[in-house]
Image (cartoon, rainbow, N blue to C red):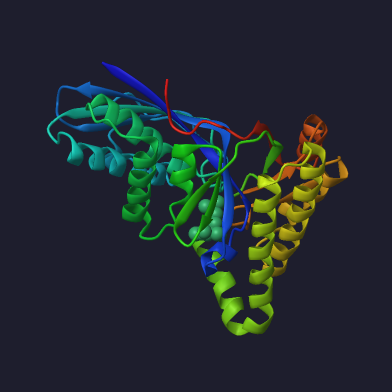
Length: 329
Ligand code: PMV
């Protein structure tokens, strides 16, 4: 028996960094996916095969029988620690004696702030739980994905695994998740080709905050207000054209505030301005910054914006919001 599951990447639409200070954030699943196939093996071991795991500047292939514990491929190995933890968590719930082999392929670049670790954890939990006969809802799998993140990273809001498991749009505040109505958003993600360290960027913002709270606090407050405004826009019954204009303006303001906090880079800003010049209604960093990705809202201009991002030295991904989260294929 074999089970194939897939789970999507995410982008933070609004609210990265300010979410660390208790403000809300909105994230959405996008249709780049990680696929995990699970099957039994006869030797009782956990085996992980990973091909085409995209790390910046590196494509890693693991041989058929490679076992995680013996491999060390930097970022790719980091991804595999999520897989191993996910398999162990599910085996603990079901049957520790069964050997399980998983094979992973992924369209999601690693370390780009697109939630590749959460997607691989969620897809692994989905495939392995089905293989072992556990009936779990996507919400439950999202919660297990959060546990995997806590075990591997020590801290996590849970926003990435929740979005990846459930799909669509999620409004997050103080540990609570609210599903927002689904709608099409024509977005283009631009990858700078390098990755920032979320941990270091969060620490850097914290230092600035502690040094000059009277300046940083109003920035964070404004970011929180942008998220609330964006939530209203997503919930309101208005024409798509008007909605896109409003969201685009909010994206541009949010980007400016992230830049003020020091998390943008020359390359990120170049991609943001290239996208706007090519007709995007809004463009901003998504995720921690310091490299990683930006995204643009570009109704009827996705290919122009993608070309502009390429010319500016980035890798564009024309994508849309994924209604579906975890899926058994
Ligand atoms: O690096 P990403 O895309 O997972 O984004 C991190 C978002 C931050 O707000 C910067 C950190 C956090 O824990 O919420």
